[in-house]
Length: 296
Image (tube, rainbow, N blue to C red; front, side, top):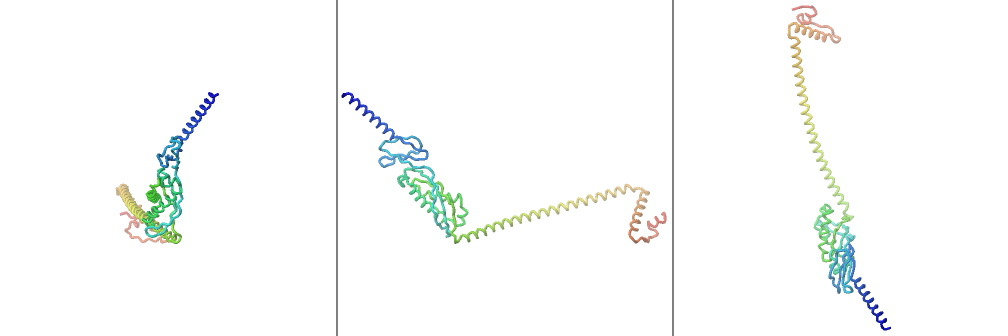
């Protein structure tokens, strides 16, 4: 009977030891998700930070693990008034994308609280806007809107929050508006500037058009002169060819007399055209000899 009690007690002890081992082993394991930091603390002090995902080990009951998100977070910054270098008031509306880059600093300074982090970010963005915008005129700010102004604000904001283990990935300006009391004046000036630019483009276009017209007119004059010159050359060549043909056709006395006879007939025919058919001829003229059949 005594032996059975001892055996049972031994089994209980072994079972308790096994359970304790299992519990100790289980409490020494933890998993780091892909989008988390795991800060391991011992006696209230962070001894290591696991940044890679997977199954990890710690000292059971002595060390504790705190998870910190490494994902991007969006914070909509409240509206703020800023003054430009030329003393113009503007209303800035921003949003920020931020993340934790140093879990140790984030836990020590902000106790891993996003609300506290966003308070620091809001102050940093406001100071960045004040420093950047106060160094620029209103016109320069309008011209710089976009990537350039975003980069300036982001760099300036990060210079204020590096000790908190957080980083501003981008500080975007949703809108940079004017107070209602001077919107109209600024819009009128912008319209006037655009009108001046349009007028300049129009004047340049008209100047180029006039150059093209002048060049075209010049080319037309040259082409007409060349055409006229060519026509005169062709006409002279035609006349020369005509005279050559006549010369060859009437190169004998009989042919020449026949030519003079036909020319006289043509002249006589032209003289009798119209309503006046009276002709007074000299007796020695070719027509008179032709009518009277007088030979030389």
